[in-house]
Image 1 (tube, rainbow, N blue to C red):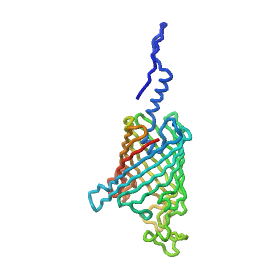
Image 2: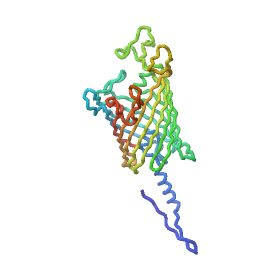
Image 3: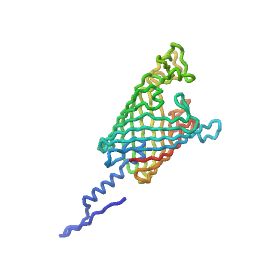
Image 4: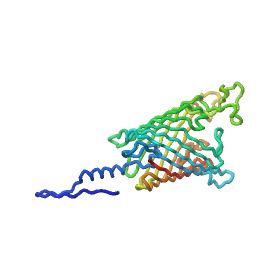
Length: 352
């Protein structure tokens, strides 16, 4: 990268000669050192962070277009093969209140173009909106002097604009969390913690009677009938969740980076189940819990300052196999390929 070198000044009068930099070079050297420690855009995309440096304008953000192919597309058995291809558009405008404090609105649109997707609340090939996320984050609020770890707290609010959240009668959700980042040249390490509390109308997902058949059935005046022409589906809503993520990014060069991310989401339902005579010997009493394991392997190429590409594997799956006897490999589904827990993605992203 370009440097401007200061003039060499030689002092005589029997004193030894020496070289020093003027203030312009000091600023340039400091800028270069800071540039080497800036968070790559690929890391910022995965963590919801902001790249370092002063902003010329208070408005910025990310735009990402993703194409995804599921692992089930490549299963040799024609009877088990489950083709999966979909696209996603993510728009994340930001307003920088200060150089480090910003507010972000995130909204996604996605659509599966294959015929494999369909649930009780959506149709095949339907255009699906996400929830609307509003985040307030203070990037590098504090640097711990002994370890050099940067602490970035954030608050997040979720508004139910997705079909899934409306199906689950979600009023809204709120969350708090933080990122811990440390740069060990040339590796970025990032730990993320997030707690989210949901506020739902009911403890279970519901359907109107007109839409219930053949998805769900209700006995007249039974527990399934909630009144107001609404019945319970038996699908438990989550009361709160905990998210933990560890990510390592190897900065190969100014244009190339390689990222590994391992995360787990623990979601807990409103309902608890007592240990009584009706409890199955294979079930655990207490509050219902659903765990999701995330594994990402990503290679990013950013040839221009505000434009880049990412290619990777993303696995979203239960931590254990169906028989609960062994743990799944987090970065690739070797057990049930047709489930499309593992997908291959290609991203085109732009920062502004």
